[in-house]
Amino acid sequence: MKYKVHKFEINMEYDTGRLEQFLNSLEGEVVSVVPNVKKTTLAQIYGVSRKIDFLLIVEKIL
Image 1 (spheres, rainbow, N blue to C red):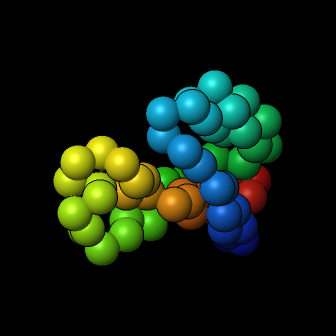
Image 2: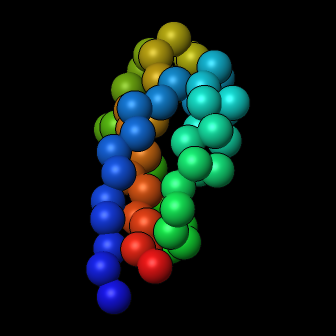
């Protein structure tokens, strides 16, 4: 089996449609979606900055 890892830059508030389109365009099977979570800061607690920068998407090539 072969796997491919995709890095998907995301802003969770605005990019849900783009993420859906990307996932539907993959030819293989999605094995895992791993978010990269930043260290929590005061700005994140108050909602001023993002908590998730990007997603790692693991695809199993058929």
